[in-house]
Length: 163
Image (cartoon, rainbow, N blue to C red; front, side, top):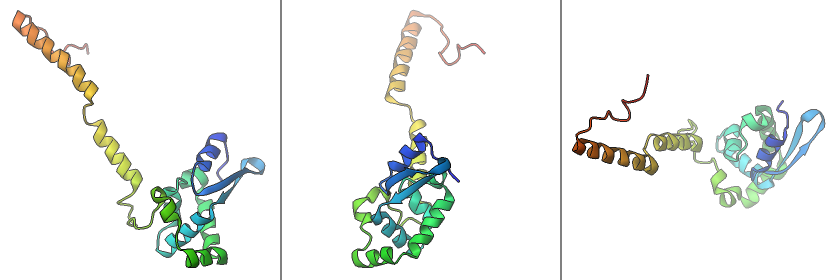
C-alpha cells in the first residue's frame, strides 16, 4: 500500500480528478474523485482503455497512488448505477472540461503517450546547441582568426584540456 507523505499528498491534490485527499490511520489516505472524472473513467473502460492509462493521463500514475487503488476504483465505477446513469444522461463531460487530461483515442500500445512524446522532444532539444552555446563559440572562433592573423599558434579549446 502506498503511504502518504506531504509531497505525495500535494501531487495528488493537484490532479483535477481529485476532489479531496484525506489522511487516515497508519499513514494511509483516502481519495475522493470528481464525479465527472468517474464518468470519464467509465466511458474509457467501456471504450477498452485500461484504468491505469486513464489515471495516468489525469496526473495520477500508479507509482503515485498505487495500482491496487486504481483497480478497486475501476471495479467500483463499473458497478456503479449512479455513474452509469450520469454517463448515459450527460455523456463524458470530462473530455470538454479537461482536454489535457483525456486518454480516449490514444492507441492501446501507448504510441501516442504524451509522456513519451515529452521525452522525445526533450532529448531532441538537449541535442541542439542553445543560442547561449553558439554565442560562447563565436568569440573563440573570432579569437582564432585574430591569432592566425598575428601568427600565433594556439590549440583549439577542445584540444587544450589536460587529460
